[in-house]
Amino acid sequence: MTDNVTDQQLVARAQKGDSAAFDLLVRKYQHKIIGLIGRYVNDQAEVQDVAQEAFIKAYRALGKFRSESAFYTWIYRIAINTAKNHLVSKGRRPPGSDLDIMDAEVVDASGRLSDMETPEAALARDQLEKAVFDAIDALPEDLKTAITLREFEGLSYEDIASIMQCPVGTVRSRIFRARDFVDQRIAPLMTGKDDAH
Amino acid sequence: MNQDQRESLSAVMDGEGDELSLPRVLKSLEGNEEMADQWRRYHVARSIMKRERDIDVSMDISAAVRQRIEQEPMVDQAETATTEAAKTGRTARRHAPFSFMGSAAIAAAVSLMVITGVQVFRGGDEVGTGTSLPGSNDFALQDASVQGGEGASRLRTNVSLVSLPIFESGAEAKSGPIRVNASTPWMTEGSANDSDDAWAQYLSTLPSDQLNRMNDLAPLRAAQ
Image (cartoon, rainbow over all chains, first blue to last red; front, top):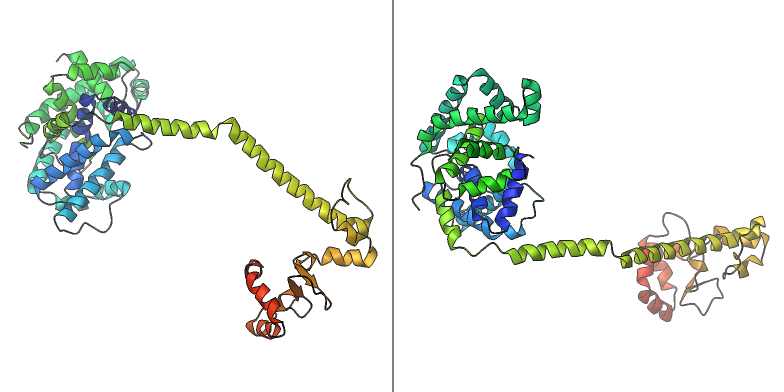
């Protein structure tokens, strides 16, 4: 079962009316969608509104989603269209061409778009980045290996178990404990940021 | 929130839970804001580990979206059902017996055309070679074969529009809608034959009734 399969399962449940499943999709992808819309819309309050609108549109159109593409690809297009419509409604001209979803990742990796970030967003991300990597450095070796093989190498639990010569259940536990350790370091930095809308 | 639930959340995030993991996690999320927020933070940590620089962690809109969704009608399940039905309908039509019969009929028609074509040409061939397939003389060209030898050979090599009933060749031809002969630009070979000048010259020699008929049949020339 891959990450996409988890998304498909969440979508399937949301299509049957399970709003908690859709909530997990929103929590999972909101930061990417907000970052994406921030490239089109400068004002932070407007970014929040447009991002909310994009998710609401996705929720309304969920019945049409047939899992032929990844959920993120689908919500990505909705977000771009919503941002463009917003610009048009404000009498502003949307960019002539979109960033392709793959190109966007390349450009992001090069950091060329970081100039568009607000100082608040850049600061928040930098603080989180430091907290995450400091936490990983502080992990016991077995937990560090497990989380590294999972998140950096993208290996399955079975492959990690084979490499670490331990049962899959142990891998599952080690990855969870590593995540939990990192989470304890970043949770204080991520509280109190709830949208007041 | 107990450790087992959080461990299940972590496994589901990796797509490594069993079939029951997701329903269990969703059930345990009911009224458990802390666990739902942990899911969010796990994904933010993942994005940071993967150096995804496009994320904006300065705001959280999930509560606002959740609030608006509560005011929304349920996801249009009827639409989902319609979409599924349309999909199933397409699939069913694609595999319906009628579709097979239609394909068979087309195949039979194409086969018949091929056989007919072979027989027509073999009918011409027969004159020159003396060989034939059963039934190869059933078609109109067999009349021409009685000319034998040189005539048959000419027929075989000069299969052209002249052979079609709509045209008549020869200087004495009177009854065909279009009369063609060696001076007709597009019936003779040569690079200049299809030029506008050659056509203008040719057309000026034709009587008005034939010009009118040619106008009616202009698409035929275009098809050449």
